[in-house]
Length: 285
Image (cartoon, rainbow, N blue to C red; front, top):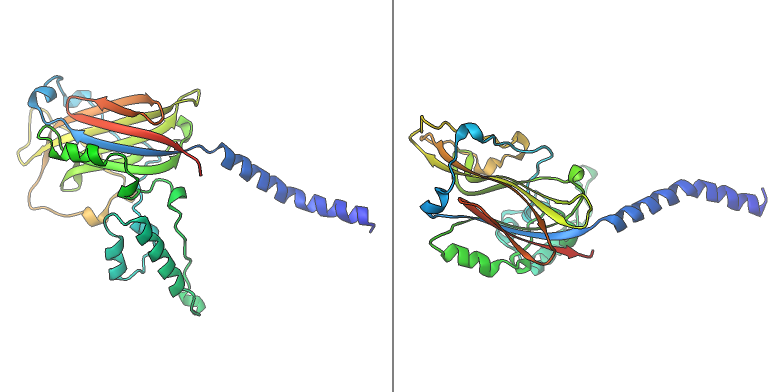
């Protein structure tokens, strides 16, 4: 085989690999990452909640398909960590704590191990971990949340701050929202948020499908509300508990809104029972 033929043969063999690499590069270049921060809170004023009539037979509540939870930083680490490390990672660890913990666990796994005991280890890159709650130092809502917590007119129910690739509507992944007090396996605040592009893909859109529920141990027989159950694979087993009391949803305030958003601007979704503030920032990774 001549030198030319060998080079041609080698090129033919490499073409599939080159095609895969090129496709992967194009896909990565097309991905548009954003950091999303959301706070959801109550409007405690009775007059505000009475602005609209809420009827059980006129509201249909449901969870969308492809629903997922936000990850916590602690869940990104291996499950065989000791209790001391779990205590370090609980709450809101700093970047330095995360880096130190990652390095320590790598060092622990450098010693020889039997094949049966080997486990894969994943280095954590927070910048590229989608749908993962970021540390408080990354938040732009610290003052906003503090003001909400001090206000007699509001209660902060949920705060999320994460990064994700924003896609068109057909590929968008809804995020499960739970917040406020727990009643059996239901929460005051439940529903989903979906972040997607508009049809022209020149504006990020927030779809909010949320409901705030007032529970009581006495059932309202005039308005019988039905709440959807969180899909089995998304239930938080740590929060599952059995109560000696039965709780009934006596009133439900449903927020079903969509909002086109400009990047780097605060946006507020108003509602008689709920309020939502959101900030969307494009990021380069």
